[in-house]
Image (cartoon, rainbow, N blue to C red):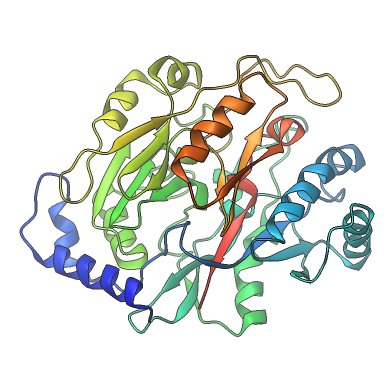
Length: 381
């Protein structure tokens, strides 16, 4: 195990055995940490992407998103490996042609041919954790289409069976131990943020919800997160179930920029983004496991409502908070908006050793997500 990871583990274990302060639910005392999830900015082996296809939502959907995936791949290949999931061999060949057309080197790109339902690998993909010996394992938290939601256009149940199998397929292909948590908790990756020092931030609405975890209490959820993610301190917002398809994932409006900084928005922008005032108050009052208040880096929403590349006005503004941290690049959602440059500059100030790159997500945003939602990190061994 790397010294840094061992140190984090020892600190977490020591902390869990010490007298509790007001930030930690005392019930977590009784639960032993078994695994620790590396924070996103730790060095990656690579990034996983599920490439859009036409088998679920048609050609117009697929074609409207290709450019975003090409741009992400172009930036990531100079930073780390890129693991692309293609629906079938025909789609793999098509993706290779798209990348070749943009002269994107494939040296650091590999492909897995797995059937998928959609692109949201942050929510359905593998969660990599380390055990006490430093071994990298995959946790499978299950995926049921954000609580068996129906598609807004068709009225039909969102298909999730293919995406639900992705962690198992990756674990099998990598010869890696998989920890099956599907009977313990359904939890999408976008539901939780960790600061890498023992704190987890989440909205109850997307976890303690009968459409994922019927009857689960906050205490039970905290015990599970402590055991399997290695966290002992919790920043819980209420969130709003039913406000959108994810039941308000945290990663759309609040992220840990580092162990002492939360990246979010000003109050008026959070309200505009449908965050309740009571949750804004809780967010701004958040403290780490030592009882120290976080500092806040506040990024604006877009100046204007987002308009897709075909001219469709979505009727709502875009968030820059849903960015992705790779080894050398920060991929920030951009919207061809006046505020793109200023948002990029604000985020760049937090990541002096990495380069911020804007990725056009206008068409992706029409479908409910941004960059963080469609990426998943694989840490180094």
